Image 1 (tube, rainbow, N blue to C red):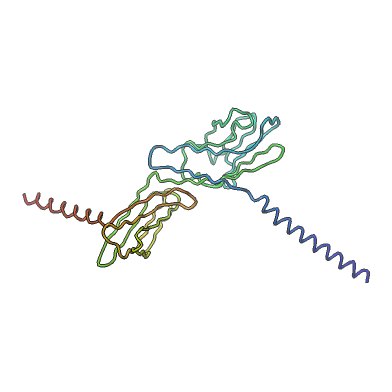
Image 2: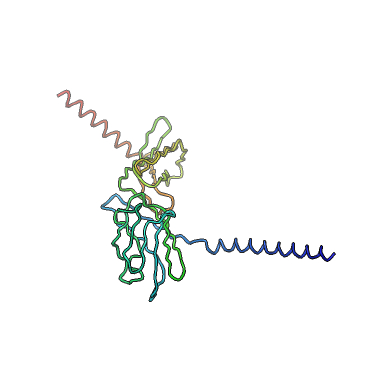
Length: 264
């Protein structure tokens, strides 16, 4: 009887331990879950790309001992600085990171940041800055590059019988774009016909969206909005049915002019 009671007590004790371990793991994961800083950089259509600087936010004021800062991209080391020494860039990031960039005159922060003097699409990713002093702390940054420097953005439509087909197309953008065709006129109803995304070519994407617009009358406006997931960047193209009439009229006049020149 005594042995049986001991077994029951032991079982309950083990069960309680398992529950405690499970609770610790669950709460532990939630507590150490890293906060990620989102950084979006737009390479625009105008001018040269602006440099990107990622800063490592830590507190080492009046710190006298050794200090190590290591940067990783998608889990792989790309840059390292030991206080009192020159920084070093790993081979995978040679030519991308400025090895001589100084973010501060303070010896505890001097080379702690990384600078991309000429950002390109391939530097998008998840960055981690690991700072080792008395202990190690890690700062997480997600860098999203939006490249519209080679943007070609068009919105057009064709009308036949009672159907109007609206086509919105974008070329040479990064990352994968999103196209949304809308109108402030409540009488217009859109039906998606098809949507196509070309695979990434030379670091860029192309996309086309085609919808059918019913009740599209003269002077109604249709807008196509270009956007990217995780970014506040957007750009629009707007057209009216009268614009198509002007375009058709210009084409007719051009054709007549060519015929007259041929005659004379």
